[in-house]
Image (cartoon, rainbow, N blue to C red; front, side):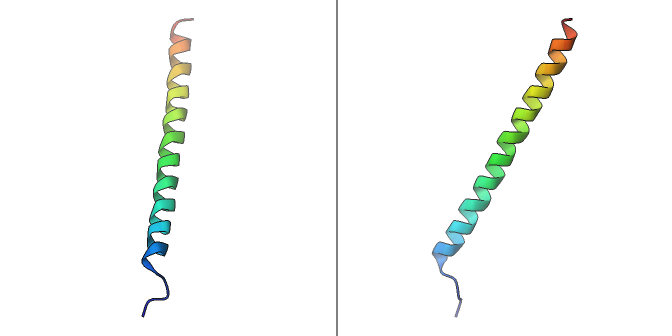
Length: 44
């Protein structure tokens, strides 16, 4: 018999999904900042 219940699995995957989502958002912000910086240099 398993020592965890299905709710533990849901919590694990919800937490994991949130971490992945937060990481993607952070990477997108960094990419947007990097792109904005490059565009600013082009117009100098």
